[in-house]
Length: 303
Image 1 (cartoon, rainbow, N blue to C red):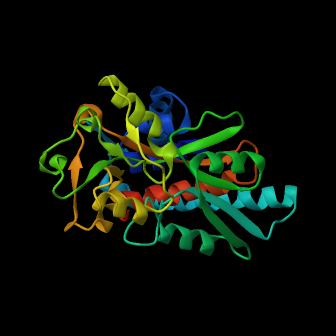
Image 2 (image 1 turned 180 degrees about the horizontal axis):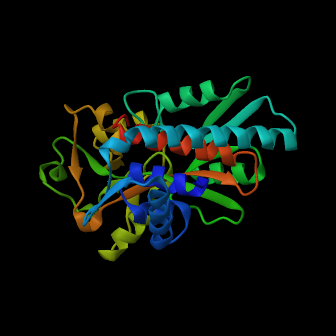
């Protein structure tokens, strides 16, 4: 039984997909399938039921997955201790998150429970965290200002490592009384000559918004950007434009003043978040442990 086999199995149990697990670990699906099959042979029983739609963890194996997850978490902690011995113990862990992702009101892309979990795990260490534009999170992790963080998409930066956290589709926030509020679905073609208020972190979706609008033959009318979600919502309520809202923030919308309209499937605006750390840095074990914790609560529907 090898650690990478357990890592693949635990991730596959969370994602219910060998292909997604392969993407998480930057290996082929065949590599994941072979490793898990070899583990099952060693154990003498199947961990997964294979179906045309993916894989399902065998119900009777839930205790095995719980113990495997705990073991991998302990390994992450051991790696952290080793890194601190090597580099000199630090009394703080520095983490960065993209703007408006930490859930302080209702649910967030990063539930506050995850911050509390990090504080509990960082025994005898102070946890310092901040929300920044996504590109500053990447720059801060690469410079060593932060031990690990979260970023939007999969940043292509030399020396940066990442693991997927979550992907979700946005809806269009439209003021009541606006002509778009009556539509069952919205395409980017409907947004010609409509003011668009970018999401809090322009890196979330700006490139996608521009490309989609240009595919319909026009450039978008982009307003200035704002760091506060509440400011964006007030702008929409006042009829100053439309914006895009992640599922985590839908509960914050004043339904008496605005509606959420889905985008057409062909125009879906999907936002992905990833854990990031500097290659060879002390934040790797923390980032991996945070990712496993996040995947576990996501599986339980707590996000």
